[in-house]
Image 1 (cartoon, one colour):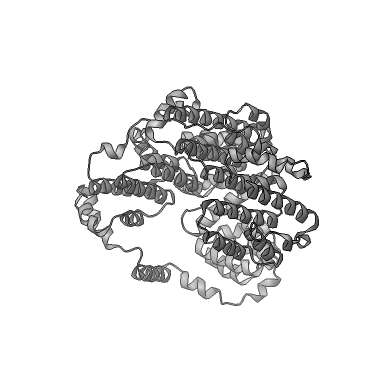
Image 2 (spheres, rainbow, N blue to C red):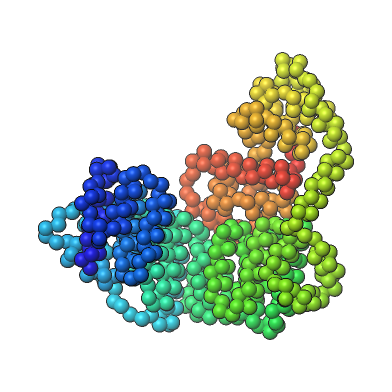
Length: 621
């Protein structure tokens, strides 16, 4: 304990001095090389302005050579102290990070060593909280785990709602009522405005030193709650994330405890394992998953994601079958980042290796469909989970006549070889050569239109407005962005809307090189957020895959009724409810924030149109 106290006190003193006088004021030579070898080496390297990555590597190598567990921890704390001081962390953050390597009883034992009468360090007052209120050491049982987890989920749901309505500071008065010190510490850091990564680091270290498995699991759930509340995520999404750490049996018990909670009224969960209940062997189950995923992929590509909602198996979703459960998230417009986390957490609970592999295939299918991958590419992606020995057995299981007809054709396609790329290039070249007027338009790019540089742009626009779009293209491609925009940015944008997509993109790229800022201004006039009503339902659902729900909520604030109706008509009931909730909880917004969100979404739509993934029926001005 004396060694540990010495390290902590030295780190605090150096931190205070470096923040007051700078790193170069530190006297490194006086440090005890035997006790503080890692700290001394690290600070010397920092004073010499060595790259932090190299310092990390050197200190990590020093720690790896150590065999004794206690010595490893002391050296790890020293390394952390080096980086805290170099980062300029305040004393509280420094102590939070260093104390996160210690158990509560160790913190308590350090108190008389840290707060001696002859040690006058005012900033040490910041860490008195860590030495007070030691937790009683107890072994948590399964029933206690269920009860406490239900409590955490309920409080997280309430806190998320309150934070989104009133702001994070509104949680401060609620903290004293919390029963768990770990959850209280995490939320206190949130209320104090501590950086997200620092909170994650501190709480993760506390979890790593936890010995009881049930306590470790519930701390992971608490950490997830804290971080999601800080990010301002929707309360329902937060609960889905928290329950991903529970198996179906545990979730079934918790849902009964929390039966009055809105989330569990809207979401039904059953203690079943759909894959196990099928009572089929791995090849047959794998074939079923691939066939179903392929059919979903086809329907999604032809009719849009929203069309999948009626095909979701409600019973399997209640048992959290990875595919059905995940597809509902995709239809609801949940970001793939969160879908991946939720499904991966749930899969990690699976102990049967074959079932785990099947769930991995299902997760991959969900993510591919969410990305709008082609059905054929989806098929090959899922087959990559099947080894060569199993492949023939899996192939035999594709007995469905409709699908069997496609099988040979799908297997003949290679999406990963050089031949496929070459063929695609040839096809593209052939399409370009055979498309009406393409060659003529390209030739137009080289024709001189110098005399038009001096023409009045408004008159020029009126003169050519009835001409063929390829005539527009040839003129616009020759005239500079600045010169054409002299006739009015709105006029330039209006003419571009009438030009064929491939030609328009070529012109925009040329103008972008000519004058990036001006061309960007013209591009902003090409499409406004309220014009999303011009998109087909299927295309709009593709757009939603790329749009952050928070940005969409902001953009809808000033959108007209027609645009708002178009958006909500292309969301599932659950996704629409979450979006309305986001809009309600945001409170007042600056006009510039709303306009910025609308521009971002309009830019995404333009990008998808340019990539030929959606079609915008451009209006001519």
